[in-house]
Length: 200
Image (cartoon, rainbow, N blue to C red; front, side, top):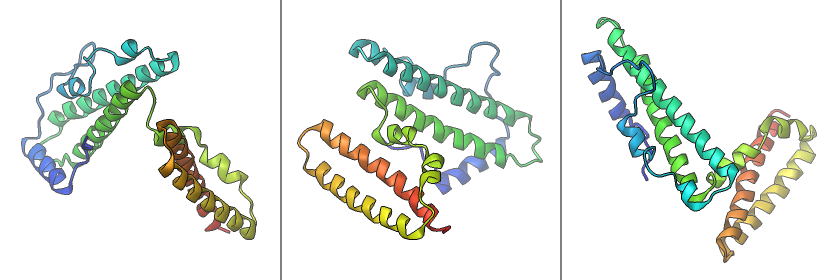
């Protein structure tokens, strides 16, 4: 699926059209947040797949959390859109429009995550690995000697090369995912190592 990345041309067109009108006719929310067509497209009104597939309690909780975050983003997006009608026509609405576009991208990205979890029962491996990795803590644990840190970087790169080859030749999906997970964590560690090497 295509990500909701806004191109520079689309961004300029959006700003121009919104600033010319300087009003978005969205009814203010009085009680429960309004459900937008974007939310429906992101699967909010579909049957919950986790109930059908018998997902674990942890996965069900994750789905609920992602849905909550999706609703919060959509609510913020609607609030920002509503605020445009109160901006005088002689004042630029560029900053507000920029926030709306960023929230739109975040909404699409969060919707992608939600659909992935409903289909696969877990976050994408990259997201899962990122969630497990504490960069600041790892950074602090790295050696302060340039020679030792450089040696560890070489060892990690060698190990990552092995994980990549094993992942390419693995026959089962489970093994491929396992090596992919190792690679993602390796990339996160390598990034922290290089950051520290640059300040030694």
